Image 1 (cartoon, rainbow, N blue to C red):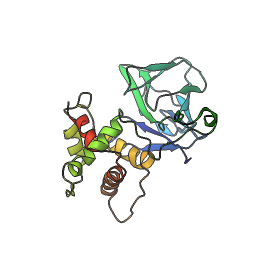
Image 2 (image 1 turned 60 degrees about the horizontal axis):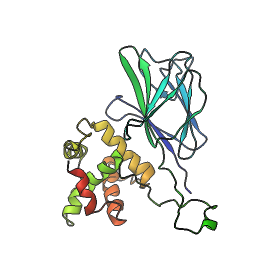
Image 3 (image 1 turned 90 degrees about the vertical axis):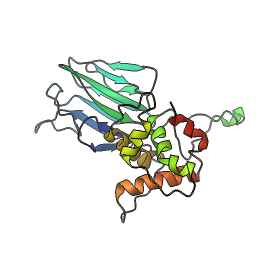
Image 4 (image 1 turned 180 degrees about the vertical axis):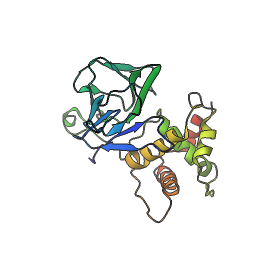
Length: 244
């Protein structure tokens, strides 16, 4: 099994926010940061502690430590049915099971947050005899959650070529945003969010190899389309997901 990395991204920090990648066993601190208390993920808000917490990557989940003495952290599942969990002050290494999560830090007048992407969970192959279930679970070559936002972004990228096999069109990020704007729950999809989903697909889900001779945005989107269609990860059947 390959290394299953956890990705962290602050929300609302420029058009292309920095992304932190953690392999199992690695950890990252987050907070407002200072010269005496530097952190890995900087949350530039005066209401956030200089060192607010720590995230440790495991395999397909992660651990959250709340370093605050007074504030409770809330972890939301943005793509679920409203699920969330609370990590109370000074709670150490609370396990978080969500594949996609938003960590919310309460501040005066609102909240400050960042996103965490974990690998898709592994499942046992129940088609095997009972005696074989004690071994390693079957892991798909490409683990894609068709209910996740990143998958719909991938479908939007593949749509022109699915509708016309001779098409060489590679949708731009603004075109993806416009195409998904009519889908319930996607009206406020930002350029930064789409860029992050594309990067997440390229880095973690489809593991495309960079091509130094081309522009990053072009090779990433083009490679994702090529892999998705070559292995039938996206088919004509998925186009109905784009229609409200």
